[in-house]
Length: 168
Length: 294
Image 1 (cartoon, rainbow over the protein chains, first blue to last red):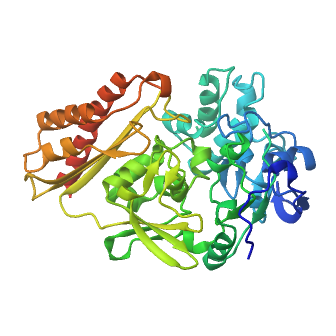
Image 2 (image 1 turned 45 degrees about the vertical axis):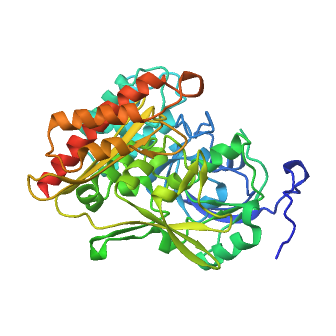
Image 3 (image 1 turned 60 degrees about the horizontal axis):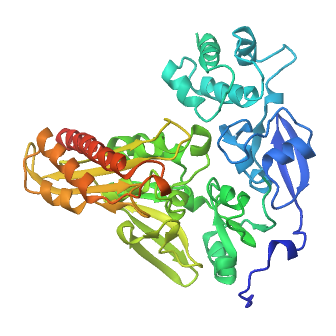
């Protein structure tokens, strides 16, 4: 039992032990040592070099860090790397195959749904997840599915058009 | 923004989690979905020395509807609630609350337990759960207690939970015949937004097409905790439900609530009062429609 009631200030806290986690990212198995306070987005970008996942607000508001974890799109800035232990992750790098771009990626290019591109990885993953579960979504379903992904360029219309064109 | 330093513990069982909380108490924080806790930690509002993750404890992710009552594990996510057919048909106001919460990305992580424990004044799940008369189970290494949500919230971010307790389950009684509930929220945007006002209403009729036997109206965003509109509830009981009655109840609820003004809130007090009235009227109509269908 620890009996001291005083909280240790952050600056005096030593380095907490790294722990080894195993996870599958884009069908590839990884074993990495991560810090307790490391987020999944930082693990992907800084340790594994998967910089397709963008880091925007870091607060779960913008959706640019969207990845698909165990079949559900999530904000990877709000997931600790250690919470991703044993999980299956799909990032934007996992969509393209030897046959070329994923149909959703193609549609985004063709419909002009990509402008600056910063929201695109998250936007495409949210859209792909919707289409996997619901191949013919209504406009409202599309708008709801991407409501956690902010885009400051397109006004969303071209993105909705792109997702609709895949759903046809 | 970076997270402060902390150690991360991931117990496999509830008993183990309770032991850890008993040992570290206020120096540890329970993490489930983490969508609220992580943001507060990044903003350096709190910096627990240890995070105790309960999201891998299987018994906390269960939904049990045997005996017609509902028992929801605290790690059941908002997305799980939003997509549950059972919850949609029987406890529609809770489903509406879950669908209004955050964004799809947040809903996939955020849990029902977390939405209660974080005790945000604008949270989406407390009003519908209070309207249904829900109770929460708080467990610690020395036992468990069941607390009604009416007595759970103590202030903004403050609850009845002791430092060594873990919220493990939410219990809702079986829906009585001729009862129904509605939930509605208002924000500037339709997703990823903090509510300006939210209201849940519940009514029980004394028979098909009968009078109102019991009514509950819970208003959010008009104080540090969700509050009941007692005057509006009183006005409804014993009356025959009509649109005019619901409008009168809405007016009473709007008059009764005491929201803070612009300086400390996202909308003026006058606007909030008007919107409480409108949402009360609207949710009562939804509740009545559901009560008639049952």
